[in-house]
Length: 221
Image 1 (cartoon, rainbow, N blue to C red):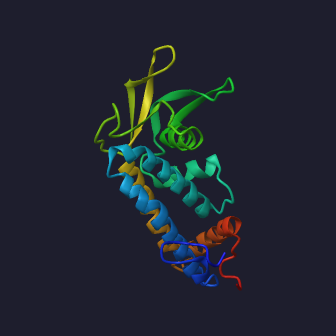
Image 2: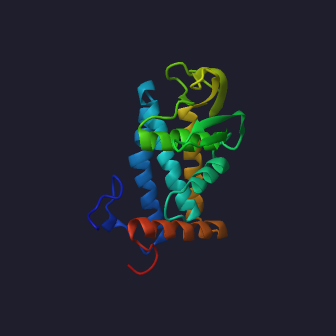
Image 3: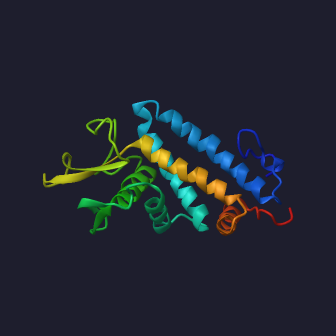
């Protein structure tokens, strides 16, 4: 693993894995170089907004697991992180959106966090498109410039199969990524601060890092 690329300037073998700050900072740069930077470039063109939202969901999935110490992605960890750190995500929709699960059951989407998880995160990663109740500001009929990260349009953008208006959740890709970056920066600052909260987060970080990378940071390499 020593020659494997960690980030643009370092390989795994260049890191002092006995130093928790060194290990955490190396991983932070990996996310900066290979996820945040490409996502920010995608935001420069409306045609890149779809992929920018997809990568932002991947970043949320990653950060949520590291903060929680979860070894694998779960719906609960993803949505809890989203509700905590992305403005507006915990707000309830004016009207619940009914969505078929494909198993003869109807899923009710009741807040923006659930809409992001089911409609964008799962829709994009599993089916290469957001669910039909989702929109991205600046694309097709969605509003070009919106004041908040999320908006809900009760009619005019999507319909149910019977022709009844279906509420549509529209995300502003730039504001969405900005909120995630804000928490990303604060999280890594806290992680290496040596404070009681930072130490608690480091325990969770190391648990996830060990499960994903096979490296036990700070323990005699």
